[in-house]
Length: 180
Image 1 (cartoon, one colour):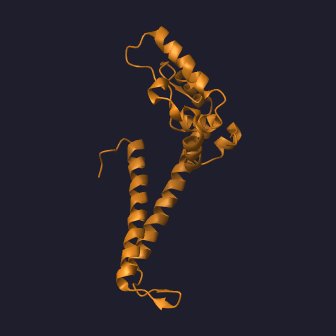
Image 2 (cartoon, rainbow, N blue to C red; image 1 turned 60 degrees about the horizontal axis):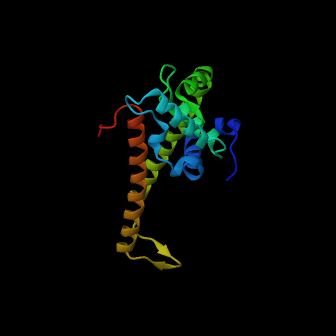
Image 3 (cartoon, helix red, strand yellow; image 1 turned 90 degrees about the horizontal axis):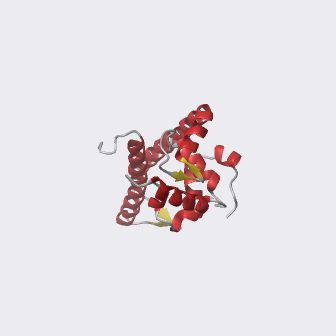
């Protein structure tokens, strides 16, 4: 896997960053809890686990993408050393976010705009497919309405599943996970 630079990550949309992290993160085989301090965990135990988590991040080919996602998601707090992401602790992430707040706000807005555009395109595709005729041909042969209907149903199911996925993610980001 090619390494992504910080500059490349800053100019890349969320979906591509997430796909890169999913495909190439060194931490994929590590327990995710290793990167977070447990409630009431003694400081010396956390320091040892934090050091190990930081070691896992060292040399990760998608570290820049992971950092960019963490910054866009506003992960880390200045007052709490309770996590590691992309080789940075929570306070370090918070400090970087503070310095890059204006850029990050614009990037997050652009990500959401892309998502909204995808939603509009998906809804239009569903509407077009539902309104389309059952009278179709394949290689000059007229297809049976039953076959066409079955194919339409599959396509509409795929499109509506993606719409649901996007809407669910948006609700979760805005605190509306339980909304219909």
